[in-house]
Length: 339
Image (tube, rainbow, N blue to C red; front, side, top):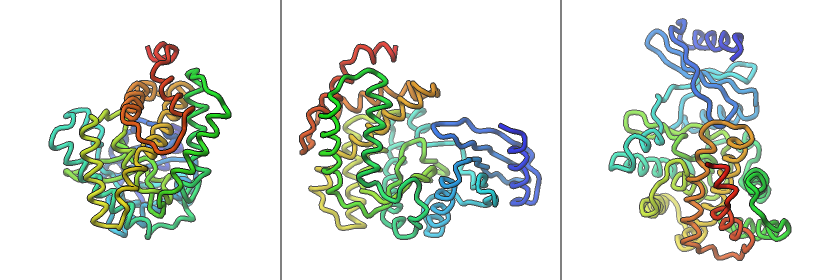
Protein backbone atom coordinates (compact mmCIF):
# COMPACT_ATOMS: atom_id res chain seq x y z
CA UNK A 1 0.00 0.00 0.00
CA UNK A 2 1.22 3.49 -0.84
CA UNK A 3 2.66 5.39 2.17
CA UNK A 4 0.45 8.41 1.50
CA UNK A 5 -2.67 6.23 1.88
CA UNK A 6 -1.39 4.95 5.23
CA UNK A 7 -0.77 8.54 6.33
CA UNK A 8 -4.33 9.51 5.38
CA UNK A 9 -5.71 6.57 7.37
CA UNK A 10 -3.77 7.67 10.43
CA UNK A 11 -5.04 11.23 10.07
CA UNK A 12 -8.64 10.07 9.71
CA UNK A 13 -8.33 7.92 12.83
CA UNK A 14 -6.89 10.83 14.80
CA UNK A 15 -9.66 13.17 13.63
CA UNK A 16 -12.24 10.69 14.90
CA UNK A 17 -10.59 9.53 18.14
CA UNK A 18 -8.58 12.59 19.08
CA UNK A 19 -5.55 10.30 19.56
CA UNK A 20 -2.83 8.87 17.35
CA UNK A 21 -3.09 5.20 16.41
CA UNK A 22 -0.64 3.05 18.34
CA UNK A 23 -1.14 0.00 16.17
CA UNK A 24 -1.79 -0.40 12.43
CA UNK A 25 -2.51 -3.70 10.66
CA UNK A 26 -3.35 -4.32 7.01
CA UNK A 27 -6.08 -6.95 6.72
CA UNK A 28 -5.93 -9.74 4.11
CA UNK A 29 -7.75 -8.96 0.87
CA UNK A 30 -10.49 -11.22 -0.41
CA UNK A 31 -12.39 -10.94 -3.68
CA UNK A 32 -12.64 -7.17 -3.91
CA UNK A 33 -10.08 -4.47 -4.64
CA UNK A 34 -10.84 -2.64 -1.38
CA UNK A 35 -8.07 -2.40 1.23
CA UNK A 36 -8.95 -2.60 4.92
CA UNK A 37 -6.68 -1.67 7.82
CA UNK A 38 -7.27 -1.92 11.55
CA UNK A 39 -6.13 1.03 13.67
CA UNK A 40 -5.98 0.98 17.47
CA UNK A 41 -5.15 3.65 19.99
CA UNK A 42 -6.29 5.11 23.32
CA UNK A 43 -8.49 2.09 23.90
CA UNK A 44 -10.34 2.64 20.62
CA UNK A 45 -10.31 0.62 17.43
CA UNK A 46 -11.68 1.22 13.93
CA UNK A 47 -11.30 -0.03 10.40
CA UNK A 48 -10.11 2.22 7.61
CA UNK A 49 -11.30 1.26 4.11
CA UNK A 50 -9.63 2.52 0.94
CA UNK A 51 -11.37 2.01 -2.39
CA UNK A 52 -10.99 4.00 -5.62
CA UNK A 53 -14.49 2.97 -6.78
CA UNK A 54 -16.28 6.06 -5.47
CA UNK A 55 -19.78 4.95 -6.44
CA UNK A 56 -19.34 1.70 -4.57
CA UNK A 57 -18.18 3.64 -1.50
CA UNK A 58 -21.15 5.98 -1.78
CA UNK A 59 -23.52 3.01 -1.85
CA UNK A 60 -21.92 1.38 1.19
CA UNK A 61 -21.84 4.54 3.28
CA UNK A 62 -25.40 5.53 2.36
CA UNK A 63 -26.81 2.05 3.06
CA UNK A 64 -24.85 1.72 6.31
CA UNK A 65 -26.10 5.00 7.72
CA UNK A 66 -29.70 4.20 6.80
CA UNK A 67 -29.55 0.65 8.18
CA UNK A 68 -27.83 1.76 11.39
CA UNK A 69 -30.48 4.42 11.98
CA UNK A 70 -33.14 1.72 11.54
CA UNK A 71 -31.47 -0.47 14.17
CA UNK A 72 -30.22 -3.12 11.75
CA UNK A 73 -27.00 -5.07 12.50
CA UNK A 74 -24.41 -3.23 10.40
CA UNK A 75 -21.23 -1.27 11.24
CA UNK A 76 -21.37 2.43 11.99
CA UNK A 77 -19.53 4.69 9.56
CA UNK A 78 -17.48 7.11 11.67
CA UNK A 79 -15.89 9.30 9.01
CA UNK A 80 -15.89 9.71 5.23
CA UNK A 81 -13.10 11.72 3.62
CA UNK A 82 -14.26 14.44 1.26
CA UNK A 83 -12.33 12.70 -1.53
CA UNK A 84 -14.75 9.77 -1.21
CA UNK A 85 -12.11 7.04 -1.50
CA UNK A 86 -11.42 6.58 2.21
CA UNK A 87 -13.73 6.03 5.17
CA UNK A 88 -13.52 4.91 8.79
CA UNK A 89 -15.99 2.44 10.24
CA UNK A 90 -16.82 0.42 13.31
CA UNK A 91 -14.60 -2.59 13.97
CA UNK A 92 -16.83 -5.66 14.36
CA UNK A 93 -13.95 -7.91 15.34
CA UNK A 94 -12.22 -10.74 13.51
CA UNK A 95 -14.62 -13.68 13.67
CA UNK A 96 -16.84 -14.43 10.68
CA UNK A 97 -19.51 -17.09 10.45
CA UNK A 98 -17.16 -18.91 8.08
CA UNK A 99 -14.50 -18.96 10.81
CA UNK A 100 -17.06 -20.54 13.14
CA UNK A 101 -17.92 -23.23 10.58
CA UNK A 102 -14.26 -23.92 9.88
CA UNK A 103 -13.41 -24.34 13.57
CA UNK A 104 -16.51 -26.12 14.88
CA UNK A 105 -18.39 -27.49 11.89
CA UNK A 106 -22.15 -27.36 12.20
CA UNK A 107 -22.49 -27.82 15.93
CA UNK A 108 -25.39 -26.39 17.93
CA UNK A 109 -23.69 -23.04 18.50
CA UNK A 110 -22.91 -22.56 14.81
CA UNK A 111 -26.43 -23.54 13.79
CA UNK A 112 -27.71 -20.97 16.27
CA UNK A 113 -25.59 -18.35 14.48
CA UNK A 114 -27.17 -19.41 11.18
CA UNK A 115 -30.67 -19.13 12.63
CA UNK A 116 -29.92 -15.70 14.08
CA UNK A 117 -28.39 -14.59 10.77
CA UNK A 118 -31.49 -15.64 8.83
CA UNK A 119 -33.75 -13.83 11.31
CA UNK A 120 -31.62 -10.69 10.92
CA UNK A 121 -31.64 -11.15 7.14
CA UNK A 122 -35.45 -11.03 7.12
CA UNK A 123 -35.32 -7.73 9.02
CA UNK A 124 -32.78 -6.34 6.55
CA UNK A 125 -34.79 -7.46 3.51
CA UNK A 126 -38.19 -6.33 4.80
CA UNK A 127 -37.42 -3.27 6.94
CA UNK A 128 -34.26 -2.29 5.09
CA UNK A 129 -36.06 -1.96 1.77
CA UNK A 130 -37.96 1.08 3.04
CA UNK A 131 -35.06 3.05 4.51
CA UNK A 132 -32.33 3.16 1.85
CA UNK A 133 -31.84 5.54 -1.05
CA UNK A 134 -32.04 3.33 -4.14
CA UNK A 135 -30.49 6.08 -6.26
CA UNK A 136 -27.20 5.14 -4.54
CA UNK A 137 -27.36 1.52 -5.73
CA UNK A 138 -24.39 0.47 -7.82
CA UNK A 139 -24.19 -0.73 -10.54
CA UNK A 140 -27.99 -1.17 -10.79
CA UNK A 141 -30.98 -0.34 -8.59
CA UNK A 142 -32.63 -3.76 -9.05
CA UNK A 143 -31.73 -7.38 -9.65
CA UNK A 144 -33.67 -7.22 -12.89
CA UNK A 145 -33.51 -9.00 -16.23
CA UNK A 146 -30.32 -7.24 -17.30
CA UNK A 147 -28.58 -7.95 -13.98
CA UNK A 148 -29.50 -11.62 -14.24
CA UNK A 149 -28.20 -11.84 -17.81
CA UNK A 150 -24.92 -10.26 -16.68
CA UNK A 151 -24.53 -13.01 -14.08
CA UNK A 152 -25.38 -15.79 -16.50
CA UNK A 153 -22.90 -14.50 -19.07
CA UNK A 154 -20.29 -14.12 -16.31
CA UNK A 155 -20.79 -17.83 -15.67
CA UNK A 156 -20.58 -18.62 -19.38
CA UNK A 157 -17.43 -16.65 -20.16
CA UNK A 158 -15.51 -16.94 -16.90
CA UNK A 159 -16.32 -20.52 -16.05
CA UNK A 160 -17.76 -22.62 -18.83
CA UNK A 161 -15.42 -21.30 -21.50
CA UNK A 162 -12.38 -21.11 -19.22
CA UNK A 163 -12.65 -24.77 -18.21
CA UNK A 164 -13.66 -25.89 -21.73
CA UNK A 165 -17.19 -27.10 -21.03
CA UNK A 166 -18.80 -27.61 -24.46
CA UNK A 167 -22.19 -26.06 -25.20
CA UNK A 168 -24.39 -24.92 -28.05
CA UNK A 169 -24.21 -21.12 -27.89
CA UNK A 170 -27.68 -20.39 -29.26
CA UNK A 171 -29.42 -23.09 -27.23
CA UNK A 172 -27.71 -21.89 -24.07
CA UNK A 173 -28.74 -18.27 -24.77
CA UNK A 174 -32.31 -19.44 -25.35
CA UNK A 175 -32.24 -21.26 -22.00
CA UNK A 176 -30.82 -18.19 -20.27
CA UNK A 177 -33.74 -16.11 -21.53
CA UNK A 178 -36.32 -18.72 -20.50
CA UNK A 179 -34.69 -19.08 -17.09
CA UNK A 180 -34.63 -15.32 -16.43
CA UNK A 181 -38.26 -14.94 -17.56
CA UNK A 182 -39.17 -17.61 -15.02
CA UNK A 183 -37.25 -15.90 -12.18
CA UNK A 184 -38.79 -12.54 -13.02
CA UNK A 185 -42.20 -13.90 -11.99
CA UNK A 186 -41.18 -13.72 -8.32
CA UNK A 187 -42.07 -10.53 -6.36
CA UNK A 188 -38.91 -8.44 -6.14
CA UNK A 189 -39.63 -5.42 -3.95
CA UNK A 190 -37.24 -6.26 -1.13
CA UNK A 191 -33.65 -5.37 -0.26
CA UNK A 192 -31.34 -7.91 -1.87
CA UNK A 193 -27.98 -8.07 -0.06
CA UNK A 194 -26.42 -9.65 -3.15
CA UNK A 195 -23.43 -11.32 -1.41
CA UNK A 196 -24.95 -12.85 1.71
CA UNK A 197 -22.34 -15.48 2.53
CA UNK A 198 -20.57 -16.72 5.65
CA UNK A 199 -17.53 -14.49 5.07
CA UNK A 200 -19.76 -11.39 5.16
CA UNK A 201 -21.38 -12.18 8.49
CA UNK A 202 -19.37 -11.10 11.53
CA UNK A 203 -20.05 -12.75 14.89
CA UNK A 204 -19.50 -10.37 17.80
CA UNK A 205 -20.52 -11.30 21.33
CA UNK A 206 -22.57 -14.14 19.90
CA UNK A 207 -24.62 -11.96 17.54
CA UNK A 208 -24.45 -11.60 13.73
CA UNK A 209 -23.53 -8.33 12.01
CA UNK A 210 -23.47 -7.78 8.27
CA UNK A 211 -20.77 -6.28 6.05
CA UNK A 212 -20.12 -5.87 2.28
CA UNK A 213 -23.68 -5.13 1.16
CA UNK A 214 -22.58 -2.28 -1.15
CA UNK A 215 -23.85 -4.28 -4.14
CA UNK A 216 -27.36 -4.36 -2.67
CA UNK A 217 -30.45 -3.51 -4.69
CA UNK A 218 -34.13 -4.38 -5.03
CA UNK A 219 -34.74 -8.05 -5.60
CA UNK A 220 -36.48 -11.28 -4.66
CA UNK A 221 -36.28 -12.72 -1.16
CA UNK A 222 -34.95 -16.17 -2.10
CA UNK A 223 -31.62 -15.00 -3.54
CA UNK A 224 -29.93 -14.08 -0.26
CA UNK A 225 -31.10 -17.16 1.63
CA UNK A 226 -29.84 -19.29 -1.27
CA UNK A 227 -26.50 -17.45 -1.14
CA UNK A 228 -25.99 -18.32 2.52
CA UNK A 229 -27.27 -21.89 2.52
CA UNK A 230 -25.47 -22.84 -0.71
CA UNK A 231 -22.22 -21.08 0.19
CA UNK A 232 -19.73 -23.43 -1.46
CA UNK A 233 -16.92 -22.82 1.02
CA UNK A 234 -19.11 -23.67 4.01
CA UNK A 235 -20.22 -27.03 2.55
CA UNK A 236 -23.40 -27.28 4.59
CA UNK A 237 -24.98 -30.77 4.51
CA UNK A 238 -28.16 -31.04 2.46
CA UNK A 239 -30.37 -31.95 5.44
CA UNK A 240 -29.30 -28.80 7.30
CA UNK A 241 -29.92 -26.64 4.22
CA UNK A 242 -33.50 -27.92 4.08
CA UNK A 243 -33.99 -27.38 7.81
CA UNK A 244 -32.70 -23.80 7.70
CA UNK A 245 -34.68 -23.01 4.56
CA UNK A 246 -37.84 -23.87 6.47
CA UNK A 247 -36.71 -21.69 9.39
CA UNK A 248 -36.18 -18.82 6.98
CA UNK A 249 -39.65 -19.27 5.47
CA UNK A 250 -41.20 -19.28 8.94
CA UNK A 251 -39.33 -16.08 9.84
CA UNK A 252 -40.61 -14.47 6.64
CA UNK A 253 -44.20 -15.49 7.30
CA UNK A 254 -44.03 -13.68 10.63
CA UNK A 255 -43.19 -10.43 8.81
CA UNK A 256 -44.74 -10.53 5.34
CA UNK A 257 -47.57 -12.22 3.47
CA UNK A 258 -45.90 -14.61 1.00
CA UNK A 259 -47.20 -17.36 -1.27
CA UNK A 260 -45.27 -20.18 0.39
CA UNK A 261 -45.98 -22.69 -2.39
CA UNK A 262 -44.68 -20.34 -5.11
CA UNK A 263 -41.76 -19.33 -2.89
CA UNK A 264 -40.62 -22.93 -2.48
CA UNK A 265 -41.14 -23.68 -6.18
CA UNK A 266 -38.87 -20.83 -7.25
CA UNK A 267 -36.26 -21.26 -4.55
CA UNK A 268 -34.20 -23.73 -6.59
CA UNK A 269 -34.06 -21.28 -9.49
CA UNK A 270 -32.47 -18.65 -7.25
CA UNK A 271 -30.09 -21.27 -5.88
CA UNK A 272 -28.96 -21.95 -9.45
CA UNK A 273 -28.45 -18.34 -10.49
CA UNK A 274 -26.47 -17.70 -7.31
CA UNK A 275 -24.33 -20.79 -7.85
CA UNK A 276 -23.64 -19.76 -11.44
CA UNK A 277 -22.60 -16.27 -10.33
CA UNK A 278 -20.31 -17.82 -7.71
CA UNK A 279 -18.70 -20.18 -10.23
CA UNK A 280 -18.07 -17.23 -12.55
CA UNK A 281 -16.34 -15.48 -9.65
CA UNK A 282 -14.31 -18.59 -8.82
CA UNK A 283 -13.18 -18.79 -12.44
CA UNK A 284 -12.35 -15.11 -12.81
CA UNK A 285 -10.74 -14.58 -9.41
CA UNK A 286 -9.10 -18.00 -9.28
CA UNK A 287 -8.11 -18.96 -12.83
CA UNK A 288 -7.64 -15.50 -14.37
CA UNK A 289 -6.47 -13.40 -11.41
CA UNK A 290 -4.96 -16.35 -9.51
CA UNK A 291 -6.22 -15.10 -6.15
CA UNK A 292 -5.82 -17.67 -3.37
CA UNK A 293 -8.90 -19.45 -2.12
CA UNK A 294 -11.04 -19.17 -5.24
CA UNK A 295 -9.69 -22.17 -7.16
CA UNK A 296 -10.09 -24.24 -3.99
CA UNK A 297 -13.78 -23.32 -3.91
CA UNK A 298 -14.57 -24.81 -7.32
CA UNK A 299 -14.85 -28.47 -6.15
CA UNK A 300 -17.21 -27.40 -3.37
CA UNK A 301 -19.30 -25.47 -5.91
CA UNK A 302 -19.50 -28.59 -8.05
CA UNK A 303 -20.81 -30.52 -5.03
CA UNK A 304 -23.62 -27.97 -4.75
CA UNK A 305 -24.53 -28.46 -8.42
CA UNK A 306 -24.54 -32.22 -7.90
CA UNK A 307 -27.01 -31.80 -5.03
CA UNK A 308 -29.28 -29.59 -7.15
CA UNK A 309 -29.22 -32.03 -10.08
CA UNK A 310 -30.11 -34.87 -7.71
CA UNK A 311 -33.17 -32.93 -6.49
CA UNK A 312 -33.98 -31.20 -9.78
CA UNK A 313 -37.44 -29.61 -9.67
CA UNK A 314 -37.09 -26.56 -11.90
CA UNK A 315 -40.46 -26.13 -13.69
CA UNK A 316 -38.95 -24.43 -16.73
CA UNK A 317 -37.38 -26.29 -19.66
CA UNK A 318 -33.64 -25.45 -19.89
CA UNK A 319 -32.11 -28.58 -21.47
CA UNK A 320 -28.80 -27.06 -22.63
CA UNK A 321 -28.19 -25.34 -19.31
CA UNK A 322 -28.94 -28.49 -17.34
CA UNK A 323 -26.65 -30.45 -19.69
CA UNK A 324 -23.85 -27.94 -18.98
CA UNK A 325 -24.16 -28.64 -15.26
CA UNK A 326 -23.83 -32.37 -15.92
CA UNK A 327 -20.84 -31.83 -18.23
CA UNK A 328 -19.15 -29.79 -15.49
CA UNK A 329 -19.41 -32.74 -13.12
CA UNK A 330 -18.05 -35.14 -15.73
CA UNK A 331 -15.32 -32.91 -17.22
CA UNK A 332 -11.92 -34.56 -17.32
CA UNK A 333 -10.26 -31.25 -18.21
CA UNK A 334 -11.77 -29.60 -15.13
CA UNK A 335 -10.47 -32.45 -12.98
CA UNK A 336 -6.99 -31.87 -14.40
CA UNK A 337 -7.20 -28.10 -13.77
CA UNK A 338 -8.13 -28.74 -10.15
CA UNK A 339 -5.53 -31.44 -9.52
